[in-house]
Image 1 (cartoon, helix red, strand yellow):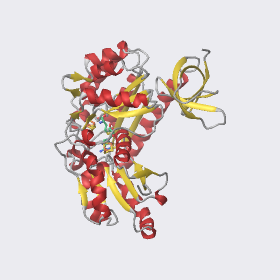
Image 2 (cartoon, rainbow, N blue to C red):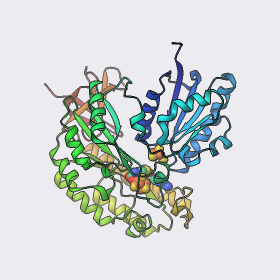
Image 3 (spheres, protein in one colour):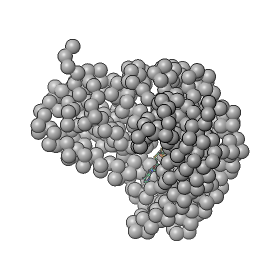
Image 4 (cartoon, rainbow, N blue to C red):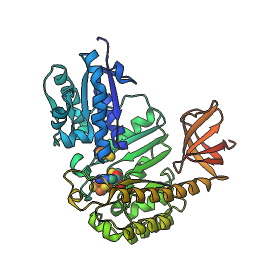
Length: 433
Ligand code: SAH
Ligand code: SF4
Ligand code: F3S
């Protein structure tokens, strides 16, 4: 065998893209991954289309790569992910240096596309093929740290009025539970201690007659797997058995990302969310009854078309009622082809102002949640050296970043007493034993 070619992947967007990037790298057997685009023979940009800024980043990055192509005629450049799906061949028209375009459901065809691109032939695949890409991807082979993502569900049938995901990722599809369990066992054998199950609507998982709750209970039986998380969930798919699992399955971590988007029923209706602010708050109460210490996270959009100041005040009120451990908030970005893009837009300066006010409140809540951990004992899975010499860093059960000054190996799960709280992390000391 000759020298392996060199692959550089840059990943944008959500955790599912992180997972997909790993699987793409694993599928390209003649390549080894490198840390810089300068050395690469193949550069893949795994892209995100969720907001305009995310999509535009791809074109500015492609512009920067131009110089590399001039110095290395063997370099091939590919665009994968949600921009690839949304724009297809248009990407090559707008930026002719692109050799390959592959949508998220066609990654198993990447080796073939790469070969075509090497021969200077057209290499575009943005189909939604009938076959399951996961069955055609090679087994997991990369070296592992203690945490891993595992996609169990993909696509979305919800069609929120602002969102491109149903178009870029296609219809909801779940992987068979036995495949998920086999992949999880394989990851654990490679040293993984924590698995985060991924799906655009992961709690809509239905592998045969298996629910997500059943899948979690089954995964919890794997020796050596210490922690289970899942993301992202939709409020309407939060079933009774999943809520019960939060109280019963010890390995299921007390953290839940449950986006609500807005606090005004008028806005929620126009977003096509199919739930109300009140039904969301009731749901949170039931989840907290099952697992009182659960850390809650969410996503919010401000400046959705026709959102008034009174609507926005209801978002602030909802946030006050729930109390989030962390949350993400975005200014509405009109996306081509989605229903809301056609509607009357909110003044951008007004939307900016709302975003700042919401973020200030969410930051206060995040700090308060963190500060309340001081003096408590939590589980921490250590992952890597911290920023200061002698430090090790990891994540708590509630997904707080925690560092200790102690000799503890990556992959160790230890009890830690929290001693201090900084803006984005907690300091702690190992408990005895
Ligand atoms: N599937 C997940 C989230 C998908 S996108 C879910 O339903 O919860 C992640 C977040 O991006 C969304 O929750 C939403 O808050 C935000 N988002 C999606 N489309 C957007 C748009 N057009 N403008 C601004 N934010 C958007
Ligand atoms: Fe987008 Fe809504 Fe589907 Fe989430 S549930 S991916 S926000 S359409
Ligand atoms: Fe972005 Fe696609 Fe994920 S649009 S958020 S990369 S599903």
